[in-house]
Image (cartoon, helix red, strand yellow):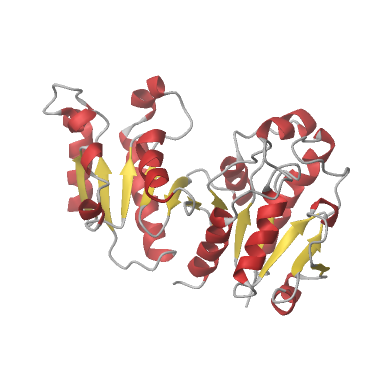
Length: 320
């Protein structure tokens, strides 16, 4: 079985330690390899250097398989070193190459620190997702947050709330729905995806008294796509979309902005939420947390989201 490639991420953050603890929790059930500099792993980590990705499956039950990628410097927990920025960036590119050349089944990325990458290497991308899209030659990608309880996609992501009405266009929303629909079919094995669409405004505009986007174009777009064969519901009031009964009526929800999407999943399943990038020509997941410099190296970081991200990548690769 081809392994899931786990990138090292920012070596001064919690990425290395949660990777080790996730490997231990999986107990060889998922073939994986860690791509990075073994100097950055927690002291005493049982690991074994491998020559190729194909060696990972045999090693994983007994030790963390490590595909060595040398970095310029050591790692001090909580203190990112700009000298390591190039290494972090190159590991991501190497992981993408492994999956695109069919040596690996999926990529799972540990958190990066964008300021450290910008300071140390002039990293020009807003984040992981945009860099992965550039490596893959893709322009349209979508962020999904997923757990066993909910899959949710924000149509707009890391922008100020005041910018959302302008950024949220019919073209963007239609493409977000299309990518989500196709990914649910292809990567999650759902033959006929059911997608719920939130409104932008409170109470989905309440007939125009709380905003007109729903009346002016969102409702029309949803109806047009239903006529094209998509199974959609909406625009729905966001405050009634995420209770238990409502969640049984759809396979994924599309929200209009960041907090409208992330608050419900983080409330429902904070530790097990996984970030999935849709629209790439390969599978990419990541834990739904950052570098957590304040607790790095203390051995207290929760590995659950990393474990779930690896498991989800493996399941998606195997169509389960």
